[in-house]
Length: 288
Length: 312
Image 1: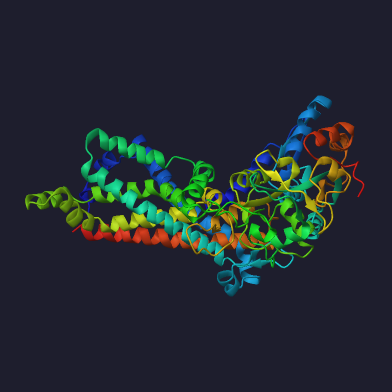
Image 2: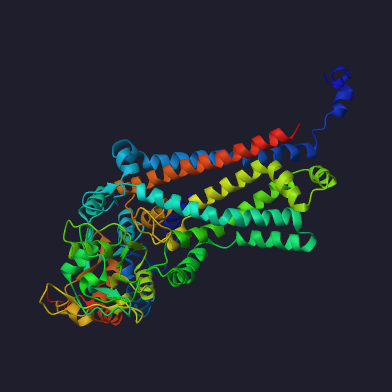
């Protein structure tokens, strides 16, 4: 128990200790696990653009990034959801004015085990699977015939501070919707993909960029009778995929100097090309 | 009382040993005392720290009926709920199963090492058992996630293998080394004269162990089991990975559960400092601390009481 309680504090201490670069500019960038891969790719590519700037990227989740930005230990927070009113208030109490940038869009993919014959799901069906009073517990209720012993729907979800968790609640369960208790709450999108890939009766969700060949992406229809749309960069860009979310970067106050240059580059053609390569939709192409 | 008191002054001066060795001795005595006291300082410091962090929740928001009676743990909902019953049940069920696994194994190992093994076999086994304790818990968790999960699905034909059974077996293996080591110490502490006396009466090796050594070492063995329970209760990473981390009141060993420790580990890092959720997690920490404290204290009292009785 002791290490558990102290580990985050220790990590922060380490972060703070590494924070004092002189000749080179060090930009601390932390937050959403959804964004961490592309943030790392940006950081690497940016070394070629401006060798005097080092961008240190770490994950931990949207909430972690935001609290670190509020506490002043990072310059840029990655976030896969909008800042909550309570967080904005906490920031203002700390004398920090958060500034928001939409850096891209992400299709939230829903997937099942590759052997699952399901062809599509509606948002309503998803709500009845994941939602608090939802009645769908078995694949047979969806008309899907599963192998013997795998009829139970194994719901895989995320820990309750994840931005992906919060966005899925908002988009699928409705603004004040609640999750049904009893889902397996994984710590990180990669764990969700791994577990769904190894569990025949499972269903899970994460950012599209995390999907691998080990899972089967399920096309989603807005409502019964609408065409089901498979998640992809294109369908997230043109707004036809129903669960696509904006991805944010937050800074404490209007960015200046090197941090502003970095954000401009991220939002420019080169940064957006890297974003697209990693499986996200560019911030500008989106119409909705 | 000392004879030096009646000696003349010059003799006293000659007896004064305040030389270099005397000072070194003094310095080291102070250092060792500081080391000993630091244990107390740390434990009090930790308690004050977690209590201070959780106090806001305990004083203003804590509702015992909800905390101990509801399974609704929804700290990030628009209307947060802090029912920890399912988390407690999760911790208790995983620890319970872990003990079912660990107690027979570690007692058997301790008896073999202490009573039957000799020479090299014995040294080898002791090192091996201690090596088992050196495996990091995240590695155990990984074994649970990637090896045990498919195995359990195959063997028992259940939909998912991240469950009480998985976490219990992993945790049992993790708790076994400390239990083996302490139980073995307890067995070794039984004087050889007991064994010799029993053997002289014509008892077989097993009869000696069962009728003489085990009863004499009973308290040490109970303490070993309790320390193993404490180890299981406080374990985090492996349980987080192997238990399935689902809020659910378990009804069978194949149910996924969520442990108190795992909840803190998964949520604390992403919680705004000082928020209600943050304080609620520290309240879970206080609860865990108290339970482990009581378990360890009981173990210590049992062990201590046993030694005191044996001395005369």
